Amino acid sequence: MIVYHIGHFGALSKALLIHLTLHRNEKCAILIDTLLCNHETKNFIGGFTERAARFATIIPYSDDEFKDETGLESIKTHVQNFFSRILQEHGVDLKQAEKVYTMFDTFNAFGAYALMEHIPLTFVDAFGVLAKDRYRPRGPQWTYYDELLEEVGALGYGCKNENCSFLYRDSVAEGIGEGKIDFETLRMRLDGEAIGVLLDLYGFNPEGNGELCNLLVFSSGWIMANKKIDKQGYFYYYRLALDFFAQSGHKVLLKPHPNTGITQAEAEKYFGDALVIPSYFPSEFIPFLKGVQVDQVIATSLSGVPTGIYGCKYFTAFEIFTEEKIFKRLYFALQVEKFLQPQYKKFYHQGLHNRFAWAMQDGIFSKFRLHSVWSPLREFEQDSVTIIDNYLWNGPSDREKLIAALKKIDNNAVVIFLDAKDKGNYLFDEYKEGAVLIKTLYFAEQPCGEQGEKRIEKIHVFCKDPSVFERLRDFRYREYMQYTQKVYYSY
Image (tube, rainbow, N blue to C red; front, side, top):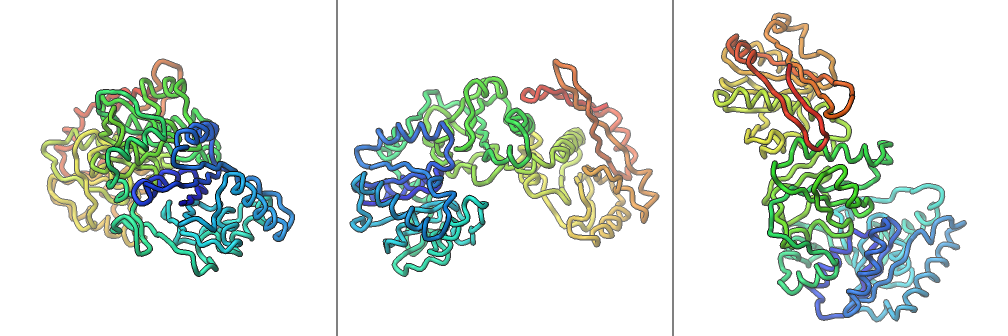
C-alpha cells in the first residue's frame, strides 16, 4: 500500500499525479486535512471518497483537533492517540506501507506522528516551499502544535529521521527521482485512460464544443481579510482585470481558490455568462476538459496559473489590489501609444513593475500588440514611446540619468509619465525648461447606469516635437467596460 498525506487540499492533485504515473496498480490510502477547506470542498471529499473507493481509502480529518493544547507532552500524546485510532479504524498500517508521502503547507501533525513512530517519510515539495524555513508561529492557540512540528522536523527542515527522503520541485527533473520531482512531466505522462480516471474522480467535465475562453483564476480569500474588503469588493478587482485584459468575445471561466467558493448566482451577477469551475477542481487539470479551450489566463498569483497551458497568453497582477491607479493610468497611456501608431513603432517602459511589463510585452494589457520592452535608460530613440512611472527605479542616480536623457533628445521621441503618486515630480528643478514640453491628458471614469462620482485620472506627455502635440489635439478615447460597468473617456 502507498500512503499519501494531504496537509493542504491543493496537494491532492499532486498525489494523484504521483499515484497514476508511478503506483497505478497499487492500493493506497489518502489522509486529507480539511482544516483549510471550505464547505464546497468538504462536500467534494465525500463524493470523492465514493468515486475513489475501488483503489483508495480516503481518511478526512482536521488538524483543528490539536489546537488549544496545554503542553508539549500533552499534544504529543493527543497526536499519537488520534492518528493511531483513525488509521486503525480504516485498516491502515503505516509500518507495512511501501511508501508514505507527506505533502503540506505549514500544517503537518500527521508528519509529526509518523516521525514520533519512526515511520520513514517522503517529504514532497508540492508547493515549491519545502526548501524554505516555513516555521511561523500561528498564535497562542497553536503554541504547542508549532513547538511539536519544529521539534520533530515535521515541516521538512530539521527532520531527525535519517530514513526520511525529500522530493524537491525541479522543472528539469524527468518526473521523479534523485530527490527531485516535476509535476508537469508527470502530468504529460498521463494516458487517456488515466485522464479519464482523474476527471471521473473530480466529477467535473463540462460539455461544449471547445469554445475559446478567458480563464480567470482567483487567489486565496485571505486577501479579503487582509484588505478588509467584502466579497463584492473582492470581485471588483477581478472584474476590472477582465475589463483591462480579457480577449473580447471569449467565454469566461471562473476558477475560485479552493477556500474561496463562488456560486453560480454570484457568477451571473458579477461576471455575466460565465462558467464556474468548482473550487476543488485543480487548475492544472483544466487542459484536460474537452468542452472548453483556454486562450488566455488572467490571475493574481503565479501559483494559481495552470501548468500545461502556458502556450496561451497569461497575465498575473497581484498588485491590482494595491496599485489600481497605476493600472488605469498605464492603460490610458497605452491608448495614446495606439493613437500614435503607425508612425511610432518602438515602445519601452521604465520604472514599472515587471508584472505590468509582462502584459505589455504579451500584448494583453492594451488589447493590441505593442511588444513593449524594458531597456536601460541611455537615450530616447526616434519614433519611440517610453512610459515611466517612478524614475527612482534604481535609486537617486536615475533622476540624473533621466534628466540627462531628456535634455539630449533631438528627435520626436515621446515620454509618458504616469506619476501614480500625484507628486508632480516629473517637473524637475534641474530642468525647468522641460516644463513647457509637457502636456497633461485627462481621463474620466464614469459609472454607467447609476449615479456615482466621476473620477479623474491624468498622464503627462513629454515631447520636443511640436507636431506631436498638434496630433494629440485630435486624440479621442472612449470605452465602455462591461464587467465594472463604467465608461472611460478622454477630455
